[in-house]
Amino acid sequence: MLRRFGAPVALAGILVLAACSSTSSGTTSSSGGSSSSSSGGSSSGGTDGGSDGGTTLYTRLGGNTGIKGAVDAIVADEVKDPTIAAFFGDNVKSPPPAGTPTVDQIKACLVNQLGNAAGGPEKYPGTPADSAGFQCRDMKTAHTGLGISSDIFDKFVTIAAGTLKRLGVADADIATIGGVLNGTKTSIVE
Ligand code: HEM
Image (cartoon, rainbow, N blue to C red; front, side, top):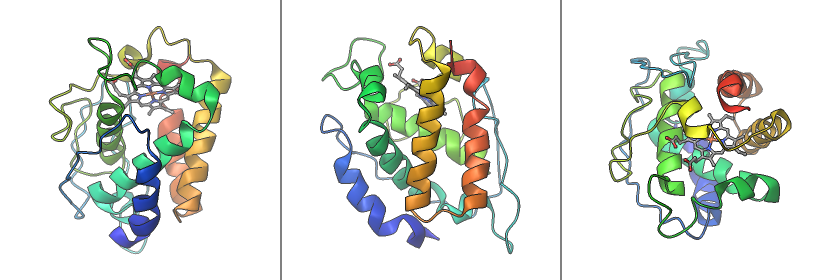
């Protein structure tokens, strides 16, 4: 199932912010299904997106490795939009201000969040193994004070959906993931 994100993701990863060093080696888990959700008002946690010929959303996305690639590609596409990129001004500093996550740390959190929501073994919030012990926060805590409007939020989700489409994710799965992202809206928009 890693095939789906293989080549395009390797390319997209190169486009990710120059300030980010991609250090994740990643453990692959493609068995899926053993969801253990500990939501913190963030991801809706623990949907497998329905079954499709015996697969789960998690396995269709290529497990942890596939989701990592998708997150790399999504972030690369998001920051092509100057309005969205502006929100990450502190995160691309080297080092970022105290208490501010690096882009790699944000991505590691996103992988855990989406993996968890897709029915994988990842936990969210929590501490991703591959991001220097950064403790991912719940959606409200992570976004409070950023002043993210409803329009910006919707644009962010639309860009993410476009990336997933380009990577070959099925429309039904994009709709499921879109539902997970949209489920965070009330915690993020202010
Ligand atoms: C669409 C749903 C979204 C999800 C699922 C999401 C997810 C995340 C995650 C997992 C983190 C890292 C958690 C942490 O810092 O502890 C994070 C941080 C962040 N997100 Fe989002 N996010 C979303 C929308 C947005 C939007 C629309 C923007 C702005 C355009 C945004 C800007 C940020 C910024 C700037 C940070 C870093 C906060 C800081 O420096 O403390 N996010 N997001």
